[in-house]
Image (cartoon, rainbow, N blue to C red; front, top):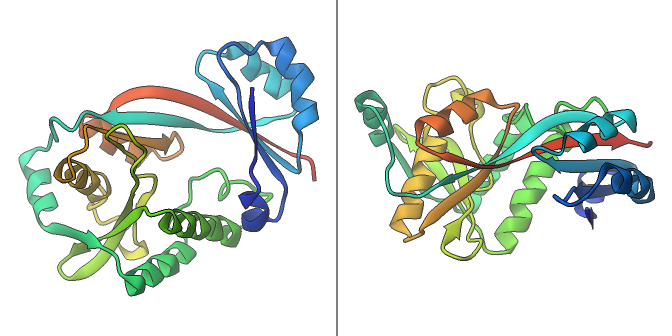
Length: 241
């Protein structure tokens, strides 16, 4: 069992938070003894797929299942598009953001472009907290040197994607999304196809990302673009406030 004191969530959400990762060799008895010792105001437990005994234990201990975090990878050898998808993607460009673009992005996040994550759907939190959490996350990653790109269609900014190097020739676009006015535009595949193109252009050998099972549209788009499943973690939460 790995326990991380997620101090950043105190800033983001106003509560103490532990993020706990169950490891393959952890037993239900061990977990039952250890979890109460690691409780905070908000506890997040990530369980690898197949640890069914611990999944049932968490329910017994008052934890709530909120999502599965799915790790998808791409070998960057083929971006599979049909002719219509290709024409649409060819009409969209991308470029690295400047400060004004980042301000625009943060304003869009405040409008509520992310509505399926575990914070937004949790009645203990509100939409402003969920938005600020994303803004702080992006700001922290920019300070560490990650890149962020805007997507453009007919001279309008329609969305964004992030781009982070995690070593070993692997890139990790940890967050992407469409802006409010374009959420139902049919252009959302660009938030995946364009980072794939950037990864190939930059010479990476592998692309790795995580998506939430709550976002079925994003899941379907990744499947259409020839991603492979790598890992699944089932995410449980508990509030003690």
